[in-house]
Structure formats: C-alpha cells, structure tokens
Length: 235
Image (cartoon, rainbow, N blue to C red; front, top):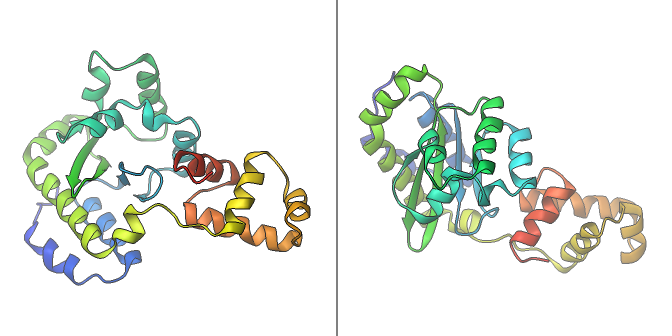
C-alpha cells in the first residue's frame, strides 16, 4: 500500500487550470492509495456537481430510486462533518430497512468496503465516498492510519473547486427556454416527434436539444434528466 504524501497536492492542484483535469487528478491520487472507485458529490445542490467512476448502472439506479434520501452514509453526511465507514452507517439504530437493502444492492456492484467523508466550506457541503480494493481485514487498519490525510485531501480538493471551478461544480445548470420547454414535454412522456410538433421544430433539432440537455444535466438518459430537473427546481 502506498504512503500518503499530501505536501505535493497543493502545488499540483494550483497548476490545474482546466476543469476536465481536476477529475483525473482525484482519480489518480485515490487509486494509488487503494481506492479505485470514488464519488465526489455536491450535497448542497444534489445533481449539480458530481465526479465519479462508480458503475453507471448503479448510479442510474441510485438516481432513479432517490437513494440519496434513504442511503445511510449519505444521510449521515448531510448532517455531520465526521467521516463514516459505510458498514457502520448501516449498523446504526436509526438505519432503515430500505437503507440496509441499499447496502446489499451496492455490494452486488462491487461497492463493499467504503468510507464517506463530508466537508463543509463557505456554506457548500460536499462528500467524498471511496471504495477500498484490498482485503476486508486490511480495510479498517488502513483507514485508521490514513483517515486524517484522507480528510486533508478532501478539504484540499474542495478548496480547489471553490476557488477555481465554483461555477462548474457548485452552481445549478443554466438552461435556455427551448431546453426548459423540451424538459416539460419530456416530463409528460411525449416522444421526440410529438415534441417537435409542439415546438414547431424539426425532429433532428429536438434530438440535438435533448442530447445537449443530457450533457448539461449530467444525465445518462431522458428519465434521469427529468428527475434531476425536478429535484433542482428547473421544472
């Protein structure tokens, strides 16, 4: 297992000027320490900012079923600034039956031994959830030895986002009128052809609008785009 060397973080982060590079930096740092799977999410505006390589199918299910409001580690991080091991969150007396079912589902996607670290800065609350790839017996020992450094990494990363990429990560998506109109039609289950007729646009133009919507909202499909838009008060 690699040693954690935080002093190099500051210079490396200071040199990053493109938002696309910040994700790669985080993946690289945590993978070499035994955490190949991670999620860094904005809890202040869920859905607005997220960096993750968790399995796509799991993330789609998590969004579709609104697990963020039932998942025990997530609920802990909404209210606390204390890191929590996933299993400990599910073992708490207040953990619901649904929360324990979520744990079993997550394990089926390879998300078993994990840690969630909340961080609050300038009224922005985020969370870093990381999944360990070593043996079960090593997990708690490694966490006990590295927890302070992992907290420092999380806080340093949040600092960089706030100072350099606040608009990209913390702000809600900004949509134009045509995109919002299209979302309203999507939320009512209309097809692209029907939407094109309502909006007096070509079928191809509507397809382009929807593709752009998915990118802006960071959604993988039409249903997820609608769900995110509703959660964020866009429609």
